Image (cartoon, rainbow, N blue to C red):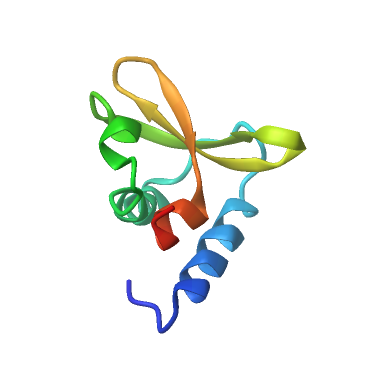
Length: 88
């Protein structure tokens, strides 16, 4: 996927995030897009870790929701949409 502006990509991913309920596993088609975004995150190698099993939507800080990367080793970690798109 290509976006004219980074803000367009953030908007797209945020809309995707709110299509899911808390606790949902992200569909495979959306997971491909999330993996591409995650690979641009400044901490991508730490977030990906041993390898990605799947993505889910869960609670984050201050009652917000975010995407979580769930690894093959059973660990998981949240990741920021804006961090992935803006590199921070």
